[in-house]
Length: 95
Image (tube, rainbow, N blue to C red):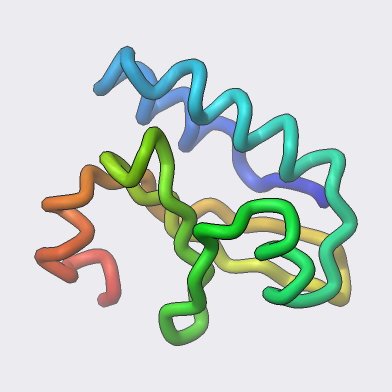
């Protein structure tokens, strides 16, 4: 999969240093994957959930959430947000 854009991951690490290793691990898994559906994503990353048009990944033991849009046809993952669990629960990211 082509992850767009790694810049959002780096920005999240700048704000929260404890995310460096978990986001790097997620990125390495995602870029090597060739997912064709959410079911295939879940075989690799079982915590992935569909929330509307988004796919949400639990990061660092569910302390953080990575919100992405996955285009399975073109093999692209568009990272939209990296949030704490509390920020995610407030729901402002949905707009």
